[in-house]
Length: 217
Image 1 (cartoon, rainbow, N blue to C red):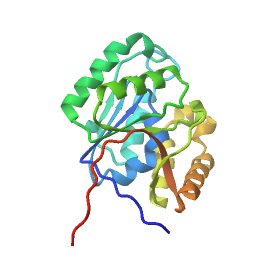
Image 2 (cartoon, rainbow, N blue to C red; image 1 turned 120 degrees about the vertical axis):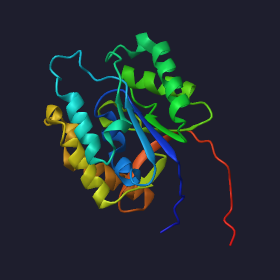
Image 3 (tube, rainbow, N blue to C red; image 1 turned 180 degrees about the horizontal axis):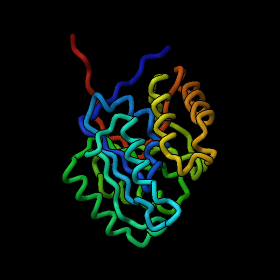
């Protein structure tokens, strides 16, 4: 097995459009790194304009708790679902303030391969707001077309179990195919095969900002 490239950030920001996006795209990674670094998980819409989704905020907080993210590190915004394109400037200003307050070393956001209008807006504005910062894209399988993971992070069986358990907190979506544990596991196995590891969570590279260094004995 080849050696792994180790990456590190003191503060890691996860940005999603809707409750469940971050968990679907990054759940195992979050569980893997939550004890090791400072996280912030920010979802821009709570989806509460939809009367059929009253339980989503509570389910989101429960899901994040399973992944090891403290309640104070989970933010739910008030932007209107499916109307993000009409609020681009406000979303940009929201993210600029977030950057000022949190100063993340790495940002995870929706892949550019995602065709959902809200997801695309979040990614475009994040690349503007977090200039000079590494930005990686995660996959929400129901709305991504042409996504291929070019940044693969090895995760453990425990991380996978945590992601499955976190997604199970979404009783609202229990019948959705993309919450099926079998599909979740299949994706980890496939990404692991690409990485020549047992399991991996996959991302694409939107921007890498780095410096090369050598270890000296």
